[in-house]
Length: 481
Ligand SMILES: Nc1nc2c(ncn2[C@@H]2O[C@H](COP(=O)(O)OP(=O)(O)OP(=O)(O)O)[C@@H](O)[C@H]2O)c(=O)[nH]1
Ligand SMILES: [Mg+2]
Image (tube, rainbow, N blue to C red; front, side, top):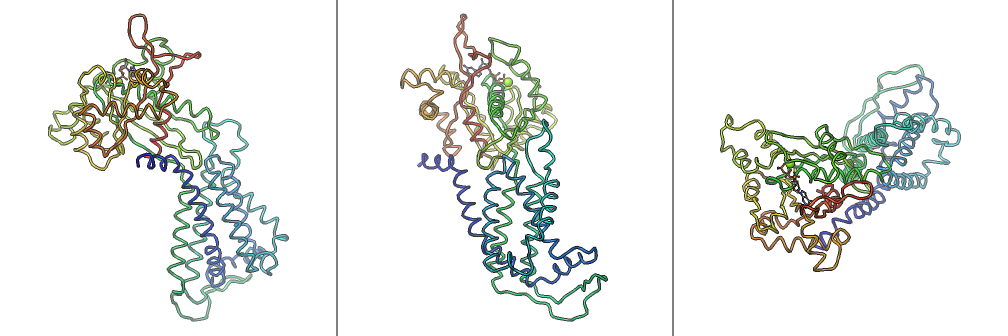
C-alpha cells in the first residue's frame, strides 16, 4: 500500500500532466463555442471595440492584435524552461479552439476575418506581447535573474481570463445597446430594451469558464514557499543538515537550464565560508547559545512543472530544545523567556513543516535520543506537516553494506527501508512514527572515514568537496509537501 502511495507521489508530475492534457482537450471545444456565441450576443464589448472608429483603426484591428499579443506571450512561455509544458498544452488548446471556430466558419473565409490582409496587425500584436512579456531579456547575456518570463505568463492569464469572463457575461446577460459609436463620436444609445438573464446552459458555461480560469491560474505559478522548523537536541547534526541541503541545491542548480539563482541568506553564506577553509574536519562548530541564524535559499523543484521553492529554517543551539514546549504552551511567563527562545517559539508557530531530527549515532551507541520534547511540541502545535530525518546515517550505512552487500548511496531506497526497520526497534522512535501518522524516516549523511585519531571525519572527493547522501531525495520530497 505504502509502495503504491509512494509510486503515485513520485509520478505526481506525470499524472498532473495527463490530467491537464485531458482537461485542456475537454475544455477547448465548449470554451471556444461559448466565446463565439458570446461574441454574437455582445453589445457593450462590440460597442467598446467600435471606439476604434474614433481613431480610424480598420476592421478587426483590435481582436487580431489581441490574438497576436496572446501568441507573443505564448512564444515567450515556450522559451521559458519553467513553462514549457504549460505552453505546449496551451498551443494544443489554441489549436483545438481555432479548429472549432473554423468549423463554424468564423475564421478563414468568414467576412469578418481576413487573416492574410490582417497579418501585419497580427505581427504588431505579437511584437507587443513579446515586448510586454519581457522578450528583451533574451538579448541580455548574463543576469542575476532566472530565465523566466513571468510577465508573459501573467499577461496571457489576464488576457484569457478576461476574455472568458467577458464572453460568459455577454452570453448570459441580456441588455439593450448602451453606446452608439461611429466615426463622428460616441453617444448613448436611444433604444430601450429589457434586461434579463439567459439561463440556457448557464450552469455548464459557468463550470467550464471557472474550471478553465482555475487551471490557467496554476499554469502561471512560479513560486512556493516552505517554512521549516528543525527540531533536534545538541550535536544531533542540525547545522550540518541545513548546510547539506544547501550544497545539494547548489549541485542541482548546475544542471538547471533556467539558471535560477539560489539567493542564500546572509547567515547561510557566512556559515559556508568555513566550508572552503577547512580541509579535514567537520565544517561547523557547535552552534553557540543565543546564536540564531536564519538560513534560507531557493531551488527549482520538478521537471515537468518546475517551481521555485523557497526553503527557510532557523539554526540554533540544541540546548534550547527542552525549553521549547513550555515556551510554546505559554507555561513560562513572557518576561522569563530570553529573546532567542521567544524567536524560536515564533519560528515553530510560523513554520509549515516541522523537521524532527533523530540522531543515528546516539541510537547505535545506545545513548538517550532526547526526543521526548518532540511529542509535546507536536501536541502544542496543530496542522503542521512533519518529516522525520535521521542524521549521521553513515553509521548505519556500514552495517547495511555488511549485511546486504549493497552500497547505501547507490541503493538508497533499500537503505531507507533498512534504516526504518532498524530505528523502529526503539520504542521511542516507534511511538514517534505512530504519533506522526506513519511517516517514513528519511536518512541523510555525509560520507565519512575514520581518521588516524579514531574520529569520524567527512570524506572529500577529488575537488575537495564533501560528499552527501540522501539530500537529493529530501529536496525532492520537500517540494512535494
Ligand atoms: N558520522 C557523522 N557525523 C556527523 C554527521 N553530521 C554531523 N555529524 C557530527 O555531529 C556533530 C554535530 O553536528 P552539528 O551539525 O554541529 O549539530 P547541531 O545539531 O547543529 O549541534 P548544536 O549546534 O550544538 O545544537 C558534528 O561535529 C559531527 O561530528 C554525519 O552525517 N555523519
Ligand atoms: Mg548547530
